[in-house]
Image 1 (cartoon, rainbow, N blue to C red):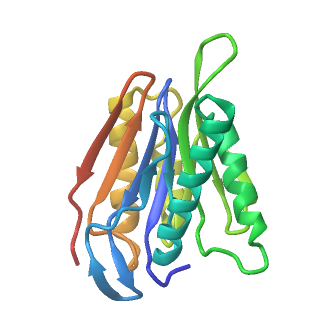
Image 2: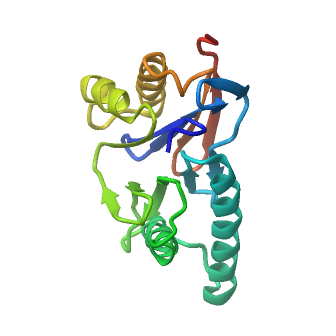
Length: 205
């Protein structure tokens, strides 16, 4: 899992979610790129982070894009975050005997039957075991550091700007303590009516 490095974190706020990833692509200690995309939009309300082996990032992104498009055509509606999480889980579990070296992180806004919105985050291991959380989920080479910093900084019901500050500080401080992650980060804040994307400058050593 640490061949190419990289880390992803998703956090829940008040009627919003955030997902952040670092930008480093490496071959273990050798840095290759400082602008590697790990977080991809699935729909207008769902984003997916794919830390792990870079070749599998590209493969799985295309596979999930295909499966989501097929779902949209067959069902005639946009996929919900919970449904997408189970689609990710079943896709990975199909390959459990020769797994993709990826630990996906998903963040989105789901709509309840009453019309209200609910933040949703989830993560899986490399064979698709789902982990639903009410606060934050982490994955990647800096996951243990992300857990530690997030435990100290995260609070319930953060507004979008406060959530951005919290997830940014968590990501930057955690990757500074991991040799295989860092070189800046990208943060997506997903609210009911918009997505805010910001790029963070980090240490380059």
